Figure 1 (tube, rainbow, N blue to C red):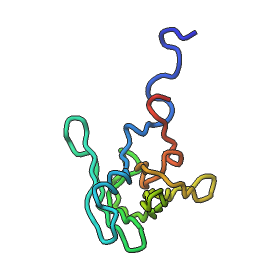
Figure 2: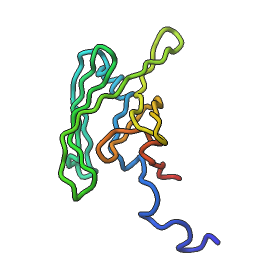
Figure 3: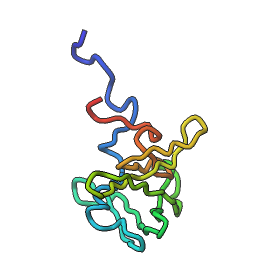
Figure 4: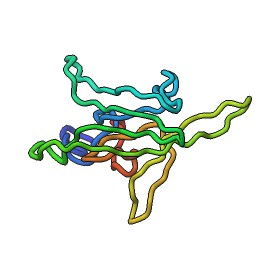
Length: 140
């Protein structure tokens, strides 16, 4: 047991959060991008410095993050222009501060997920939380 070649082979199983394109609400918040009326761009780069993707965003007065981006279902599919609305939940903290979370727009067993998450991952055409996107951590 546990010898050479035992266990799962690389490439099998779920994708990992480390290799996915994600939006991180903490980085947006600390950069001052979550105030109503703010807009900007979020991008992803490969280790060699080439751009692998990006998204334009705008924050509405009712704490909705509007995302505009191009996505495709798989490498053989053409890119599609997408617009997605993600609700921002603000949770009260001690000393009067609030902490923002992104509300997952995904579905689990036909029901809205609505989990409050710090990261949403682009899987296929839509952004979802780790559970809805069926992503694992590399250490799992």
